[in-house]
Length: 136
Image 1 (spheres, rainbow, N blue to C red):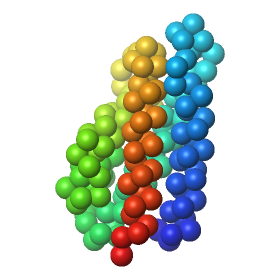
Image 2: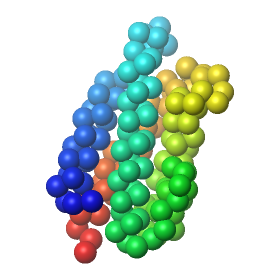
Image 3: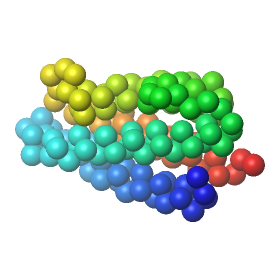
Image 4: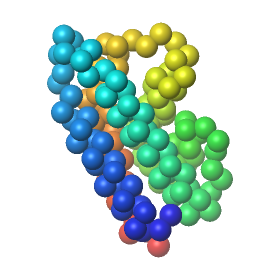
């Protein structure tokens, strides 16, 4: 991934993250009015993070797993992500799979409670992703 594309993806993530932050303290009563926007933002954030991480693994000449969880696990092993961040992103990948594929009944309260966690996780991811630009 070129530095320009990398920066553009970071900016895209920041836009999604800023939008998600608007819902960080949403009340139960208001959640249903924004449910689809929130779910979509969680999906987009995970997918952009996974895409960027896949490219970082390839840049480091590491194998790129086929699953999102595998990508984040491999990134931890390669030193591209901290253990804490990798684990948080693996959980987010599981949540994304439930939202996209509806493997299970979606628990709206769990999704609502995951918003502050997602905000912290993707803010930390952006820190790592920005550092990747400075690695030769």
